[in-house]
Amino acid sequence: MSNKNDEGRRTARQRLAVEREKQKASERRRRTLIVAVSVVCVLGLATVIGVLAANSGKKKGASTGPVVAPSGAQGKDALAIPVGKDGARSTLTVWEDFRCPACQAFEAAYRPTIHQLTDAGKLRAEYHIVRLIDGNLGGTGSLRAGNAAACAQDAGKFRDYHDVLFENQPKETDDAYANNDKLIALSGKVSGLDTPAFTQCVKKGTHDSWVDKSHKAFQARGFSGTPTVLLNGKNIAQDRTMTPAKLKQMVESAAKG
Image (cartoon, rainbow, N blue to C red; front, side, top):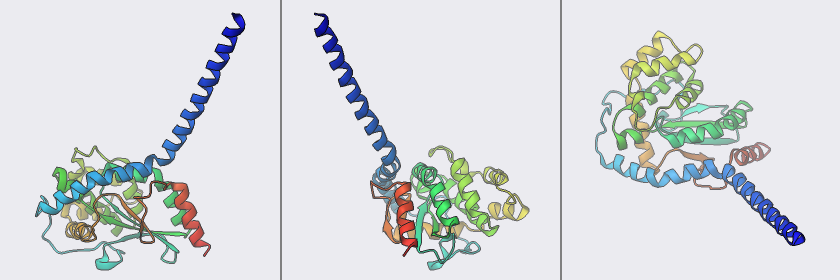
């Protein structure tokens, strides 16, 4: 009887060990895919958001003033804010909304890799600002934050302030970024940005019409969700196998020619 009990316990331990290995493997796969999946999963909801925004007519807070592109903006209609060297072999085009939680998830996972590659001259990033959440949930937080980011670009501080906005992003339903004072206070987290010129730019909404024009360009391209991320023109946000490591490998391979 004792031998049978010992054998039964060994068998149970073996089954438990196998199950633990399966769980570990599953967890590794989950960690690898979580960001790609989170980006892809949001596309379905974002499609609805895009339709609502497209059909909503004039959005609350839409600007009718002149279109003033931020300093150094490039591309068609000067709608892209560049980060990195012009001579880089790879270009990462990112369409983002500062109120979008999926955009924040993308930034948290990919930002270190993007910074490393742009600093090394292997990647050039082009950021386009979108205000889908304003159109879906109401409010002006996407517009106000987008304008503030453009004001930071005028001061040569876009990348740092862009990161601060995502690091301090309020809940999607909380239109906290509609408050210019909050956006101005966050500039204190970026060395050299908290200046009278930045404050005036934010309060005047200098780049409001530019943000609206960027959003219209997003709609015209037929994109349906944020973040929309293109590497050398290919939409990688829809690639379920994409990871920061894979992005780095693709960019470094292109850099080698």
